Image (cartoon, each protein chain N blue to C red):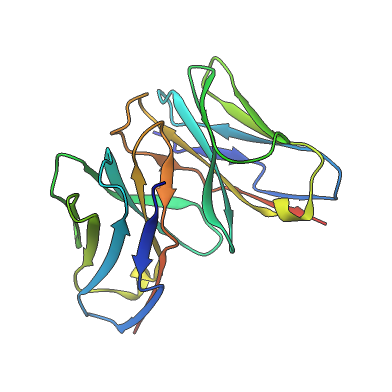
Length: 114
Length: 111
């Protein structure tokens, strides 16, 4: 089975631009979560989608948004980029909507905002 | 609010040693605890998942234990190898599919 894939792997943007990141979960997985990782804050939860519905959202401004498609692929969008948005963005998939299931992470997208 | 702490932040040991990494959490009402490793600039690799009803899990040279009542988990690595060098992260799920991570332990195994 193929693992979680994320595209693109690297992005360089300038302040004020917007960006869209993509995540394809493991085949059959319906839950997709997004995390931001920075040296100062560590790993922080952005949001989670299950069957095209956002079920939970972390404490990030409204500039961060996401969606999930009927094939479980997910995208996240960041508008009006700020320097502090530079981070590794990771997505994770899980086989079920239940809370006891293992989560599998993709390789991440490294976003640099100049 | 659930907080997860990992001690030590960094650890350096010679090859062949057995070692223990620690993880503590403030809210014992968790569904599961998961250990990951992360190589520099890479994503997270799942090592072990312990569900709330379990006390431990084993995979090869790795053994993870969970004591919910005391809010602690340990990851035991036997016969360490240079390839084990990485950052090890523990994370708990209490609800809503949100993993809460510790800051990680950066492990270096010296040949």
